[in-house]
Image (cartoon, rainbow, N blue to C red; front, side, top):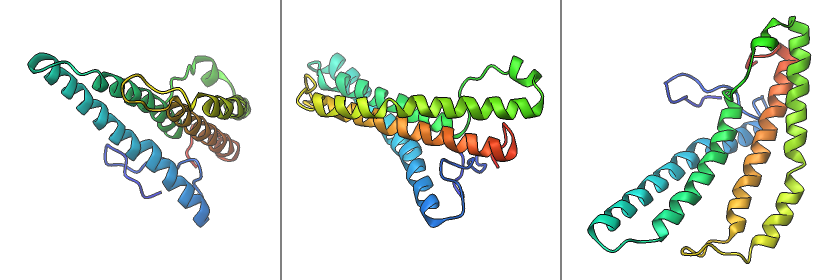
Length: 180
């Protein structure tokens, strides 16, 4: 979709890769969340750790950088999982899968991705309920509501489910392992 991958090549098509303007806008939004917000999260985590180390050894130790680095790590894991799903780079065991005929591979790939997306979709409503219930709970030093982390989790689950559905559609149309 015109986005450059870190190695200089083109990124694979995203969740909503297609021709319509809405799909392009949604794909750019997914790329922004996964890539740009992921890099910002990594930098914030890095700076928090540097501040923590400097203050621990040169001044009075601070508590909030440790808490912030944990929050950023959690966000980074969830955003990274969605990015890996978009790039189809999650761990896969292909020994048995590769031994199957192409038509069976296509059916198995589509079925597993649809099943995965359905499983992720079932986590959304309980996640929304937990987010609303956990809003009053605040972190110890930064006083950030727990619902912020649950929101990042929910966004990640929706991105993951979207990538799995897009992958299933691509595999159905073009066969597994192709980014159509």
